Image (tube, rainbow, N blue to C red):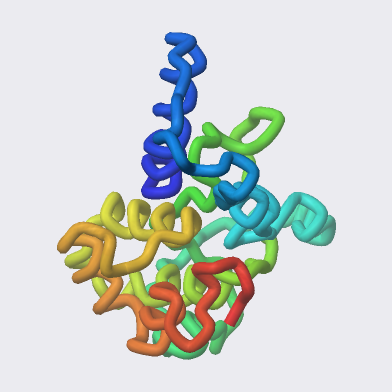
Length: 199
């Protein structure tokens, strides 16, 4: 969002001058051949890889051995012991159900590409993969944080926003869901990925 604002502030005067056909005259005595104006390029922003690079080619496309599986009874997954490192390890056989929150990892997209209601399992890849994974894993331990707040935080990170530039609600959520090291990474500290170079 900040980059869009900067871009508008830089381009608006030039567009206005071009549209209004106003000549810009330099003060007398300044040799025009010695004027060097360095205009920042957008190539760094436009050529930077997305914070998350996971695509359809990374997806697990099917589990055919489950096609004919029809369990008669489902037990709540929460009956299993929970481990922060491993989630719900399957310590016994059975069929389980679980109601979970889901998050959009591609802002601006409505549903899966190509339509339909299905989503596929895929590993998270890209500069922000570890941070997004931490948010998703830690959100289970913080039911007091609204799903919409976590979603907004995810989108802000995917947009490469710095944590200190976010609203208080998102900063507080980041403080609960991320480590200090992860927050420094997002803020460009320690050679952070905000500048597109990776950590």
